Image (tube, rainbow, N blue to C red; front, side, top):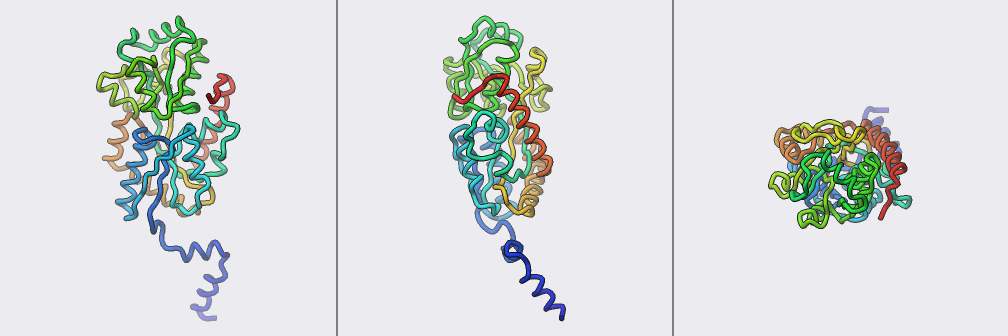
Length: 323
């Protein structure tokens, strides 16, 4: 058999899926849809727009940012879970959509791992304990003392039930032994609006969402929810210095539908990690209070498994539930 005959045989005797991949034009060859399961303006949206613009510049194909908010990220996440596994539908997933919701929602329409191909962890970020400047507290210690005198009175807002902001409050309740009332909103920016107006006393808000208002004097920051000080917010003490054991790190990640070819997962992983190493991107992310934390796909899967176990325990002990 001639060399050319061997080549034809090797190609046309491949299994159908492998032959289709052989014939498919190089990825990407058309527009990519990046689903953000939360409203515009939040941490997930900010990262999506940074990635989307850089991918467009690098690959020459447009990346459409599609905000599909609702049900604490469940609606947008489910859209991607059911999308064709061809690399053209991305998801900006979070601690809420892929670590907390499965413990809070027995009817979650997707599995955080079985229905997705995790690409990379993107960033970790502290939540920040924020209050209205008129509140008579300037430290976590003073805030805890005040909270214990007003059980079932003080309210904290969040971007929705099941978010890291919500679970930060539930963990706070559990560890200080009081009851602070959760008030869910449809997005973090909406939640902060009522703090400005004085209708809500405080919140544990994602750093990117609240930093502009802290710097502008409209909110007062008391501490961060992570066990260690944030490299980008070194002036804020960890809440754990006052409440031992308090540790909540919110995170952002990138996902594709389950079944996406490993070659596409790996190419996207490599490109996003390259983007996040760029000085201008790192500077922009640092300005939001987040820390770059890109990983391999395999390391991201392990991270999600650990997070699922952690938040399952917190939900069970705290009695947190969907409102």
